[in-house]
Image 1: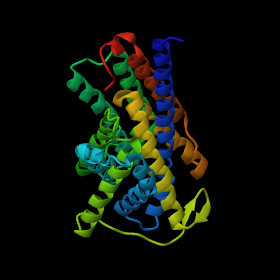
Image 2: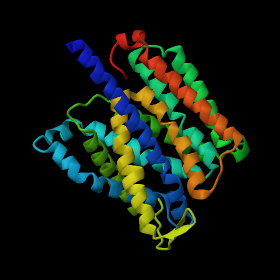
Image 3: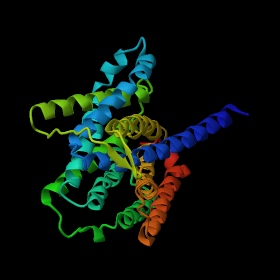
Length: 323
């Protein structure tokens, strides 16, 4: 095999692994819904859940981070801006904004607002590169957003009673989500994905602790057992799932996927989180998906495929590296 052929093979393998990482990340993020809901109904504050979630996740990734950065801690100083943006906007800001939106409007509407972030990613790449998105990306975006609206049943969720403050929180979550894909996809070969995820969540944890201590954000917790899939489990079991699977694994794999796929494709693949959320709600909560949700899921997948095809066009690739 020639050097060019070997390079092309390695590139395809990297893209395939990146796609797998992004999909598994979406599934891990989706698992947070039932566990967070189980804690909320017992009296937990959303902010406290998020703080413990990302704080424990950062601790779980601490040893791998030390190993990855051993002997070259100057990399952290060189990328401090990226780490701060990741921690404050992509982790803490996005989650707090989304939970505050959910507190003021139907979950479906809040989630739809948050996922407007994928369109912000497309707009950001367009403005930064001055390259108009291919038609397949535009079509894919329209299909995906239409499918998202069907899956979430926005019209039936009380969308007419939109709280203005909740709407602004939802837009804030969209900005945070867009920041995650843009920052995570930034080509930084010297800063390992595990270090970005760990240090970013550490920054987010410190910020949330400070905001709760000064009373800007509410704090609250309970020690009652929680109900998951009809079974009673200790509260810390739900926290550990949120921290180790829905945060540590999700953010790490999401960062790896974004670096391999680029921000545009990774953000659209992230929409599969909604499909996984529907499946998990079916398995854990007994909430069966309806015809609209199935049709919406098909549209989301069609949109993701359209965007992926657009990004793989030779003309697109020849213009330069992915953004």
